[in-house]
Image 1 (cartoon, rainbow, N blue to C red):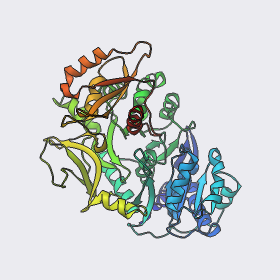
Image 2 (cartoon, helix red, strand yellow; image 1 turned 90 degrees about the vertical axis):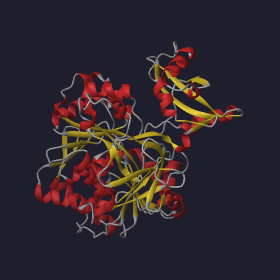
Image 3 (spheres, one colour; image 1 turned 60 degrees about the horizontal axis):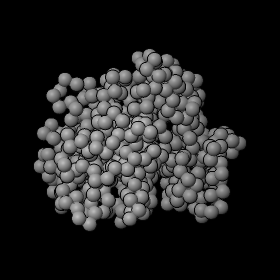
Length: 510
């Protein structure tokens, strides 16, 4: 099983259909794309001397060459290591060292990484795409697809590293195939008339969701800006039909108030898949008012790529359901290809309604962390991937996330889940964003601290107002003992709030 067979198959069936586009313009049809992928694969193997199983890293902004490199790597039997293009040079070096990548492919924004070949023993060379060397590789003799076993590594997905050094989740060809099949089963059917907009980084969510679209011959559209722009998306929707894209909740919220989107014809929009962080009910309701029943939520991790549970478009549209609001604050029901449980500290499944750690197993779960058997054994136990997330099931099988286990606050012997405090505070019209963490407290064990971003920094809500809001919606003991008004919250490159940095700030003060 080699995922590159999808490109070859599409070239035979739809040679003249668009395969890759930049905005409204076609970059390559399936025939030329398959020819280029096979030639690049030949160049990787015969000009660069790479062998099946060797790792090739990609550090590029979203662009057509990214997709060509990705499928050429698989065509040649190699392992792709997509790296977040916004990482610091030292962070990139760490990923290259950990993966023992022999080649790194970069764009002209990252050509300074070429010097890493002098510092990293395993790294042979840096290829800038597109340049003369890239052109030479793409002009090599085409080679047939390399046979790969389903259990062979295809993608090393390095975690975002919010709690320490990133680890490389080893995703096999079988893992990515099951992820794609699960998309068809639970999210959307896809046809060759559809399109996927790669607005988020290809190195993570957007790249994963490109795969089921490639499998069905849909066109992959790279925004000319390389990011999320309302006006550009409106143009894409006019040019292409059946458009889907992955976005973090912060992106969805921003687009829902973008004048270009509010004035746009959304008939070409098929699905917005959101995930990676909580989306608060008020923001979700506003997005549904703008986009209609086109939203689907995914809960997953790099270790089980985007595939644990889902809230379908039908779930989002079912506003008449008496528990619609509760369901919209859940992450949905277990996906077709996995088993999901909530367990206690001993690994025993807890009753419905009780809170515990979320565990998952299935053919989509990673084979392990690259060259880290200890970390693998800690995470995958008795065949179950321990997510580190805390949650509970309801009677209908909807899973609600409470928090990461590391974010749980225990105050006076009582468990406090930051998200429910955040939900209460966000009800205030003058609160733009909030993050809640625990601070060591000699009397209570931990005290609840809320970092609040006001809509208007000159006129923030009062502590009394926020306290009253909490008392109206959550138990008194969950109310923050301290409010910190800040201009922004620290986030990583994917928009996730770095609570670790907030805790460190409190620790430094002490």
